[in-house]
Image 1 (cartoon, rainbow, N blue to C red):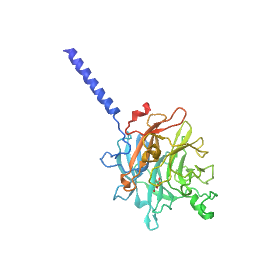
Image 2: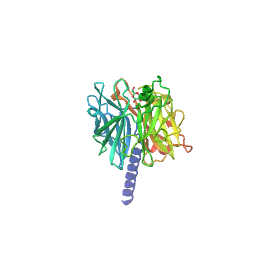
Image 3: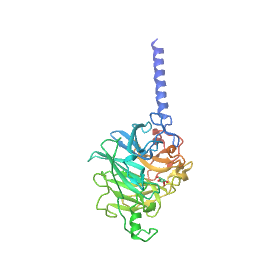
Image 4: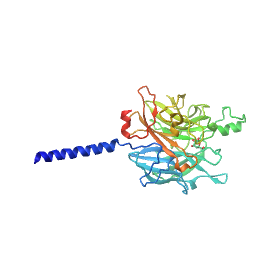
Length: 353
Ligand code: GAL
């Protein structure tokens, strides 16, 4: 009976289509819930960032795995959802000893230098009282590392009068060089920049990197190779991105592990002037950035104007159990944007916002 056979195969084909469609449409990302790697273990990549290299995504972050003397972890993925743990990208034993104790790492980020063919990691290197406040730089020939630690530095020494609590020039130099929450950004022309909270978190700095990306461009000249931005706005957790030739920077206020309201700033020139706008978050708990703090903005694969906001929902009582809040957003035609809360979402949501 050819008709019946055809009918059956059509039905089967339709059913498989529905299954494929259902799998595609099923919510995949669940912001704020425990996110397991492909081995079934909670992902340990806090304060992190993502590098796309040769069609593979690499997620680097603070590795807070209990009992492991790891500073930075590396995970890989091709779909941004399923992450394989590549291992320890940087061991804590590579870090300097400060005040008799091994330093630790926060907010590591990695970029690739096509000229030297090296993966370059920058990070905030710190010790207990948070007054070490220096940049750490490490390199590797492969994305997963392990990275070789190069140096700790303060990228620029700012001797200007920026109204530090004390008028002592030495203290001003000290505070002006401070380096805490940070991020890296590679521009369309291949030049790279580091954004970081300086002046005891009162003012954000942006500094162009040298050709190897292993330090700041020298000699450092204010407003030519580096700049003070968001002056005295007291912001941290910088997450930069670029859209239609304009630079955007999402930041948080400075309240330690406790969440607060995000804001965003924009500029036509990366060294400024920058202008700050309000909180782009909307929906449940938007006033506290959904209980999270910005760490990175990732351009969405194949979706011009689509981005993924990456944030950390810190658990100060159990830092390894801090969660990830990843949310999609799409730029509006007038170049504004909002980041709406979603309990669950999948990559196809970019089209329906
Ligand atoms: C936050 C910062 C985190 C961590 C924390 C420590 O303000 O964004 O990266 O340094 O303080 O309290």
